[in-house]
Length: 343
Image 1 (tube, rainbow, N blue to C red):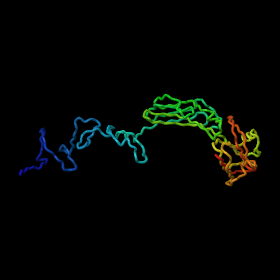
Image 2: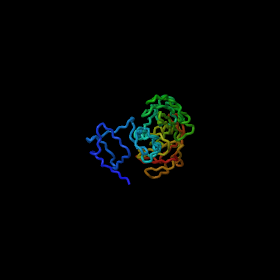
Image 3: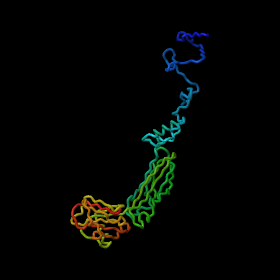
Image 4: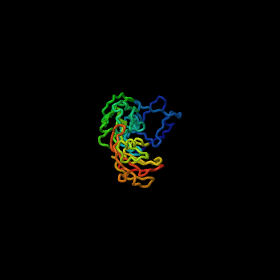
């Protein structure tokens, strides 16, 4: 049987002279979890360097060895989860579309801002009465696109009222703005041959960046009918269209509307006046009328002479049939009136 004598290696028994070379062989094991500490004997740390190191490389455990590798924060380390949707609220469904840790963190905390766009009219109202074709074909459609992060590569405009992008604007990369003409078919939108509740046409400005972010600005023109109401002491039910139109023009209240339904809260009829309400026949006959919360079947009823039909042409020359609805008696003061039509 062979015996080995191993001395206790301490600072006194193993001491290397300056200039000597100590060559160790075999396997050295460090049996503490704190590892090994190198000092210069005076309590100062000894710096260990690695030859051939380059910027961005760090000591990394790779399999079963520790070696210099690219830092995962440099953007070069593949990150498979970066192309999956985030599954925690409020980010559910959000996808950074990143393939490295660095790009994922950058996109998550500093996402690209999409460009901003807007479009509006410099002249003319967005809500108009049927027959109003003002400013058609003029340069009064004002648009703008604002660059936020990435350069803008494409700008398109929809100006013809068809929904198609019919105008290409040369993109300069940065923020831009300008004026363009707008058109539409008057026979379809402003003056339809068959009366309808409302028509509308939409104009758009579209922009896209070199990175694919997009923005769309919208504005619309909506044409509607005008309903009128007020008090008058004269009975105009059954009068000629000409006479009725003159009376309607003198009513104190009117509003663009796409329905015949109307609620009048605490409306003052005046002193000893009939209450009148007139609206296009396309909205249908009155279905229910309540006065101060109580149903009233004697208002707006053709069989007892409180409802008639006449032909009205507005100031734009657009003509269609209207109902003229009247209270059964002359009344004085303020009333809560609710009128429900077919539509």
